[in-house]
Length: 224
Image (tube, rainbow, N blue to C red; front, side, top):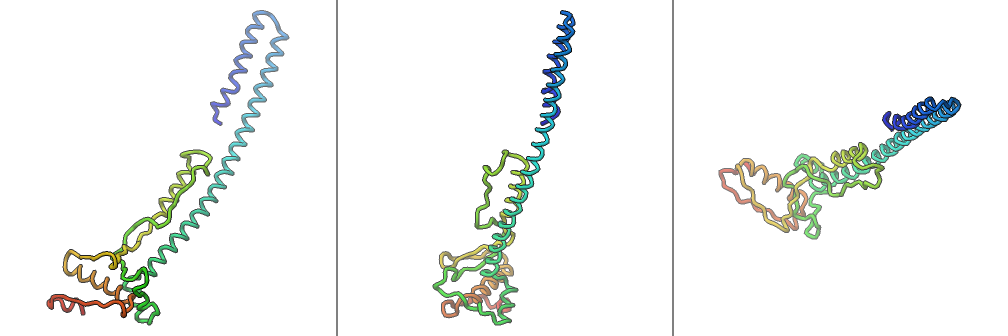
């Protein structure tokens, strides 16, 4: 409630009082003026008191609503963040980068040759990484909000925008379903080929995968 609302509440009885006083003066009814003024004062006091009480109640309701919704958003943020991190960790586990591969080889990891031709991820590899949406849907039910397009709804949308992407999501290609071709500078292509081969040779079973390298002898050093 604003000050304008308060003015609207008290203007009418005051105006009626002034009119009554004016009429009473013209008609010379003094006792009627006293009764009318007293009634108007009581009405104004009652209206003002109700306005102040209602305004206080609304402020308390809004504070309670904001506190409750802030806790709701905090819980939602934690759940989304946890699920996003689990997805990110799964990507990093299934498609390790060259440093992780090198470390696991040096440590004799049990993951070497872990994929066989019966696995769904057999012959899959990460061709690169990009910023992309998570694989689960993030949405908010507007029915949970008391008002439409209010600051709390804007805050909820910010949670969605901030947590809906994974910065380094792998671009996964499946050689069982498609062939690939690389175009570009030889030095870049050679590096990319080595990255692909390192992933395939590390994770795929040597019983199911054989890699044959055919290249120009001029680039022999690149493939040593």
